[in-house]
Length: 200
Image (cartoon, rainbow, N blue to C red; front, side, top):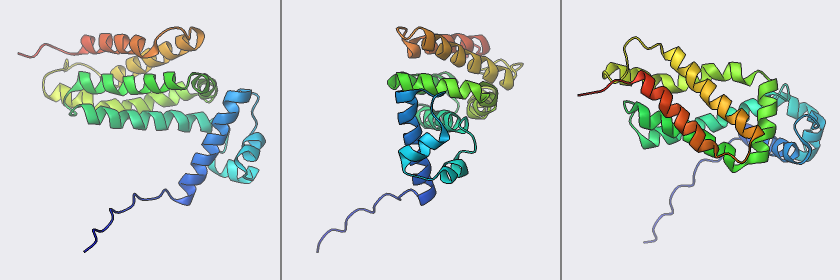
């Protein structure tokens, strides 16, 4: 009796495939032309889509780097969850930021162009709320276990970590010879030392 083949992984729906194709087209153009020089019409032509389709998925050009950053943060959450339990604050948060910084380093020119667009789209301000949602479970779990100073404000921690990442990335954009993930890890570790307490 022949063995049945394993089930195929679910295919992304049409909308997801279209969004991914538009993001890929935009990424190609941002690298070859630059973020500022690329228009939505250019992206439509590169993707073989209509301008209307592009605007349906990305109402503004700034929404493209916003999605790029969000996807990177989502992958970082998966990496953090894969490396540590929610109660292991230091390991999880360091894994989260290491994932982001290594992703940025892996595509340097694309990252620089996306960061230009992200900043212009007020990404840093909007990212704080995303980061707060991402790290809150880890900080709160550690606080419940007595590993974090009970007076610590989780929002303040998120803002500090957000500032650390943004500062390191913006410096790396100007000084590409630096090793971003090492700089981020050192700064994140310093922040975490400031909020954690010794556990007997």
